[in-house]
Image 1 (tube, helix red, strand yellow):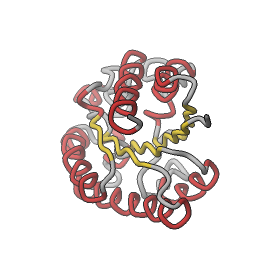
Image 2 (spheres, one colour):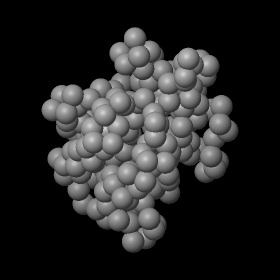
Image 3 (cartoon, one colour):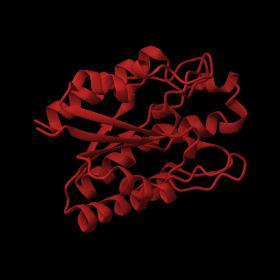
Length: 216
């Protein structure tokens, strides 16, 4: 039997950024690989995380971070696969973008339409999609090195509203939905990223969802 292939498309939360040491967590500690271990040998998980990646916005200060422009090359590169997991939105809360949660969801709507169109016309609707709302940005970001970049109060408030919009999108486009904030919270080390325990917990939660709701 061929392995089920799962593509995880995200930002530094998926890449596995360690908020304490500011390096990448070891492979076995990153949530996609935690999920793969739990799912077992019949699954292959592909990590596609990039630090600073946005849904669809160019970042003149940090370079090529636009997820929308990389989406199709990424999908084509890894086809065939059976599940696309999308977890983006945290970086779109940065002060320099000045986006509301509704505007972030509007970008995600276009992002989903692009993925669904590729699935339908190029893959005969072969893969499923799981949209994950990212963990909330914590108030502790105020005192971290990320505080000025994200704008503290603005980013915290916007992040609280993303999950509701994403859930509405999941219903509209008939994709699966999971709210990461129901299972994990950002580390107080920087108020944005998950610590090692959070990475493991998220991997466990998504693995359970995948086994129970998607590949029953």
